[in-house]
Image (tube, rainbow over all chains, first blue to last red; front, side, top):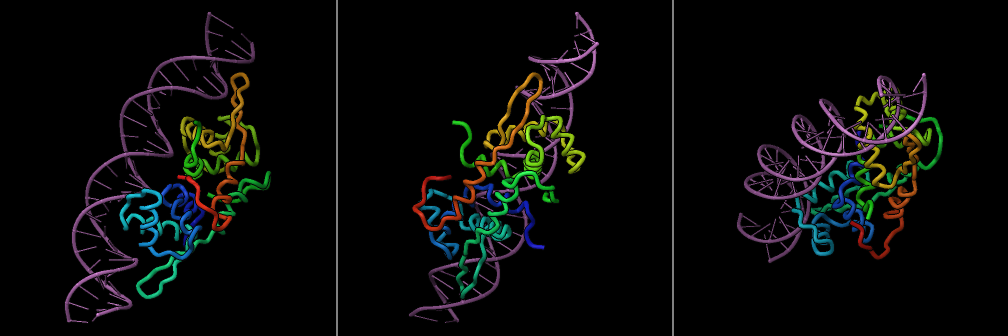
Length: 101
Length: 101
DNA sequence: TTGATAGGCAAGCTGCTACTTGCATATGGT
DNA sequence: ACCATATGCAAGTAGCAGCTTGCCTATCAA
């Protein structure tokens, strides 16, 4: 299977990955190089291209972004649906606990 | 100041801490020993008491639990309000980005 | 074809984090 | 006072996560 429950929380644990989600919220469907540029200029993130690429892999494994290849470009699109499971897990009170590691 | 934005996500990154939140959702206001017992019996968490205590410190620093001392007991209460900021950050589309590292 | 652009793969390093161990403090019961 | 219970503090350890470095592949334009 692709992406268990813990991947979502681990993906959100890194501040650079949260900034990536911010950037995709503001402008969806960016390429790796576009994201690198925006992080560097707007947020002073000095990480290398490979570092950002690895962050994108983690976000994709968590189901927070989906990718679409087109020629030599790879566009990254935000998918916020997994986020809803976070609040749903603890906001409804006193239901029988399900297996959720 | 006590607890910045990143603390919340780091607190949720650990599976044991998420189980603690599950237990407090099911039964609020437990002591450290009660939580230890429930994690051990219901979820096969073999961590020591000090490990769980450190987890509770992290959760409190993140604002997810508040503590109340009474004699030699310390009760832990859930506070899910910080969770709402997660979905609010990315679910509303295209607003001017604010400083949020 | 050549060169430039966009991205991928893999190994190695480093700092952080979860965990343990050992001792200390404080409250309540007898 | 004495002891058991409930929790706190601090140092040390091991594993992992984020980052870098170096090289490789694929697509497009001239």
